[in-house]
Image 1 (cartoon, helix red, strand yellow):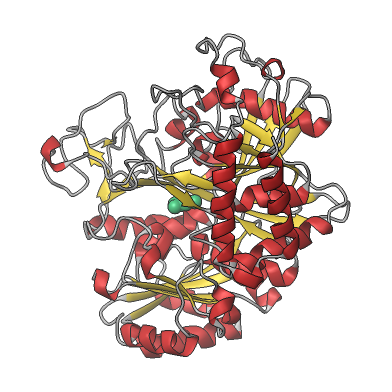
Image 2 (cartoon, rainbow, N blue to C red):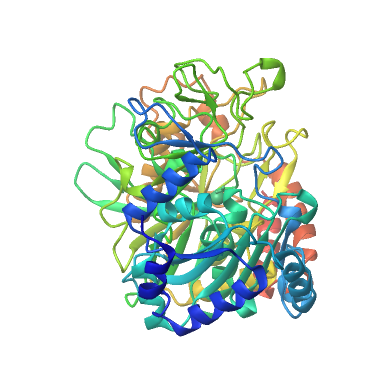
Length: 592
Ligand code: OXD
Ligand code: MN
């Protein structure tokens, strides 16, 4: 095994600032060992074997799931904890009403008291990582210090981690400092704190992905959105997908959806059988960093190199690529087990659970066998649809930005914003209805601007202003659209089949960007006519397509009033031009 001492001599001297910070953290947390991660495959295997030996990971059937392991977490630690997540800016208004806030000095005292001595008897792992391709000017680096080897394994799959990242940090002379400890997993002593002005994160008391893999939501969204504002780009909660038509042209879309709207499925969509010659290429499934390019277009990189996806519901029909890619070298968290030690989850069409996600004999009276938020962690390269440009340092040019939400009656299947400013209003107005899986209160509309409610690292008013400023720098900005796959008829039945058939809508979006598809002007933006969408062979119910494309001005008035009320929470920080855009939108629906 590569010992801690070997690593220290080669890695610990590479960057003086990183080493000094590691020393400072070690003095506070008092670990028994310090382990510098080089990010090699051999290191991954060693750590995985250690966790298996300690029974912190369970092996899975090596014939059907080679290289796969299962982690069963503490039952109180299975999801992000928004109520325990803080943005600690000097001025409270800079964090905004969209974030929980504590003054930085107070937050540091509170967190350091938790970290004091917390790694006694444990190993401190130093995890240098790069968000984005190692040689991309758009990438940004960080170092996570953690006492969880499970976190190290996940970071290896989710980021460019180890020696190459540390080399880049030494060149950049800048990195985000992320300090993490699982502590004693006591929910009373669990906090995720962000210090955007210091480019640092402190996370204590949770081992769950979004709270503990600090490169993901904490760095790539909350801290990066702040960095992006100061540097003139956008860090967004968006998938990036390339759509190749039979002529071999590829158009890239960046799409933002609140959770439970099928983001991973859309990023890996399988074209319907009638779409011969169409191909889908996944660049990213969760986060996009968007930069204005010299040619006036917007370019996107995916800062991550892996997927941390929800497992339940994944099967050969809903997401063939995901289903195939998680059959090897995957970390499963909180799924159930079959009698022959295969992972099992609700929505899987084969197998039967015998052990549930809490390690108990499966009993339907205890609820689902796999936790509703059980996850797979897998390297993106295992996706059969992995884009050849996913590692391109310059990113991919974005033709369209697509917002979406889960709306029962309001939003049509698709519409196009009139221009960038109108598109910012469409994004700022994103909202989604809660599902049974997420909460008991089904159908409650939750405002989630740009799907960034839990992730914007600063005041939404300033964030919308920044979006408007970025648009002003673009000579050829992406067109902005809104989709709703979840509209229902009066009997409550979904009107649109979704999944692969969503390509029919994306095709109209691409054709609008090319200027070859028709649309008509409505009170809320440009909509396709029923004849402009390809619904051939779908067998939609009579009238369904008209209902999917209906705009009800009364409902939209109520919606815009709701958005106005929401904007009021942000007071003077809401840009005047956005307020004026909302007024014109209101006027259009009132007079429609
Ligand atoms: C995620 C989320 O896990 O958005 O990606 O919650
Ligand atoms: Mn997400």
